[in-house]
Image (cartoon, rainbow over all chains, first blue to last red; front, top):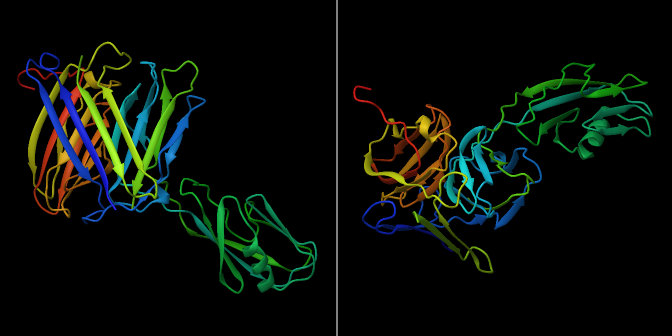
Length: 238
Length: 139
């Protein structure tokens, strides 16, 4: 497999300088430090914006850091005033005006997802609840701590993943490193809320402090009165 | 007229053909009638171990449509240069790789920096721009 990227820069005599300028180069997009081709791509896509808000185009957390990733971007607008400001995290890289395109190397340095554990103890009664991330677990019968952990781990959370790390401990990890909220620790956490009629307890302990992703690729449309500007994009990654 | 930048991407990565092409005339910010009319270019041998300013940001380039081309001419695929702008790592160009990016010289700290790894990396670079705050003698 191979991916080739060819560039031609030309300026006729009398345009930029009195003499003509021409440069042609071609690269095979290969993996970091290797001569084998990059093997994955997002495919060619389009993003049409609706507001002047900032949009995240590619999340660094989802890719391996410090590889030879390349990102292709093109502003498809024909209105000269419409542009996309490209930023890496919150660092402005530059503006792509109507018809402009770019091929950008991308380090994809992700962040660190927050994690916390909940240690369950004692016995659990019918109708006891554990509420977190919009998910409520309600017991239909008396349960042991091990069974409680099984129920917690079996649930699907929109913003967190969870695994059983021991018979009485469930560990949650944020899906997005940009979620910097700190879960309250202790047996009476306002974030992981347990209501029990029996003697069951769930003690929260933060295990990993979050660090925000430093390298997400973001776009912000500008110069448009309608805010509808379309950007073509394609990522080659390994 | 001005400078034309054309790009062709071809791949047999997919079972179907994957290709993209783009051609743009490098214009000043917000116009289709007036091309970028200034440029600077160079070829440098970048030794390892130190981060160098390849291009200095100037106030004249803030919020403009400058474009930067950099090609790592190294033939050893393990060599690479890391591109950094204002302490933010953009990415790596391995031997043979090139990039073509917009460059908003957001402020005086928005220099485009380069660091070589693996050995001395040879790079060709061109900056197309529309404004530059020139330094007076003695600066």
